[in-house]
Length: 138
Image 1 (cartoon, rainbow, N blue to C red):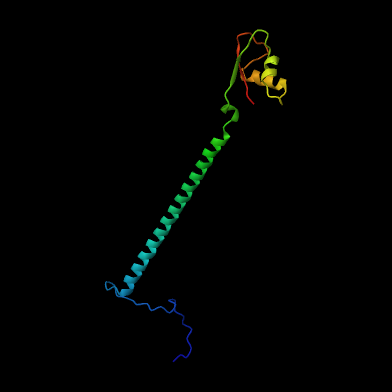
Image 2: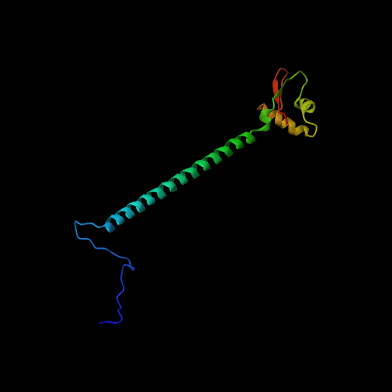
């Protein structure tokens, strides 16, 4: 009789019951149930990850659309909110005289004349009596 054995079980001290074919034991039922539960948990875990991903995408879309709306509100041009001032050119008026009487006090006259020309799409400074000019407001 051997006093010391070198035999090591591959089953880590678990009691394994062997059943005859066609005669399942409680162990086979337990393993089937355990496998079913593990499979169900894996499916639920995958579903929760998908739901979390969908929630994250939804939150990101809401944040981006919020910033877009806020950006559009604050990105509007201030000058487009002001009403345009229109004048009718009278005999003897020049762009210089019109600019002097309508420009802001802290603005150079030449800069305001350029603004008048750009606003009215004028190629040169020639204006005639009866012309309607739109004056830029700064």
